[in-house]
Image (cartoon, rainbow, N blue to C red; front, top):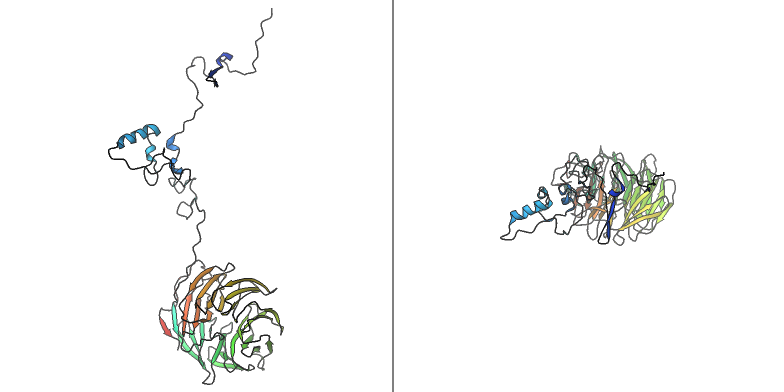
Length: 475
């Protein structure tokens, strides 16, 4: 006799449990599945699908869900409120409070769900923003703090009186040698000021019939050239104060000079540039005729391959060392071009500045003649000098602000603006270490400014110097 077959449900039930232990009950049109997973001996215990978190570990204060509580009204039962919070949210809930004080987690906050760093964990906690702790300048809102601008002292640390320093835009009367000796042309004389000991020496006196129009040291700093109002170019031994050579050839004053490794170039009001060589007996070995007015700016590139010249004809010319014709004729300036500087950091990068009607600093790629940038400074540009320690340059200005400006390159962001001269800042030279500049003006003063960082520590310029503060005379 066959037994009745048991209907298979397709469910694998554990031992001690049958299909009747599963039932489906209906409550108000909704369904709820109940399962009794207990053994027959303990059917009273049930399992719940609800999870109630521990509020003491939820770190509500981290998300600023606790705001500052309102002050307790007069006559209120503060003890009862604390007891009620303890019963509702746990005994240790009161230990969490906002930085401003105790608060209620039930009241809405204006800063709700805005995350902030949890400073309760120690500096070595894996939840800290950095393994360096909280004193490293990092925060959750700004992972990298903004870099502080370099501080440049606003006042000169040394002032020299320079009587008879001429107020003439086209002259170049100040230069600083690589041996730390400053040369200044004052009237008919050239004076040497040794920076290490402040010793002043008179190099020469041209006499009543002539005057100094330009001075320029050789790169080694042993010889100095002097351009005169009569058109002569003299070369002197700076250590022995002895004249070595006198070159002729100019018809009128030689207002600008420039040395390369072996050639001395001189620019004159006669519109010509003469190339002089101490090894040759003649006055000059080459004449460069390209300007239509007085030559007032002249600089050799650092590799001696190119010579840049600026004139009162608003032109900037670039000459090849082997050519008598300019390789570039740049005419974008609308005023006299006296300020010229070659970059020591990038080959073929030339900066030039225009006079009162132009006021612009322009940057050129001399390999192709393209203008890279132009910045309107708002004032007559008298001089430019590039820092050899950092990629920055300094400009001095005349009408109408008479300021000194330090720029970052290539952004041309202003690092600092210095004022102090009462007249146009016509003269500029840089110290051998590249940190200090000296400026001269028609107010008959020379001012020393610490504007560039040292090569080893570019982060900060300290207002220190080898010279004592005060004002002294250069003669």
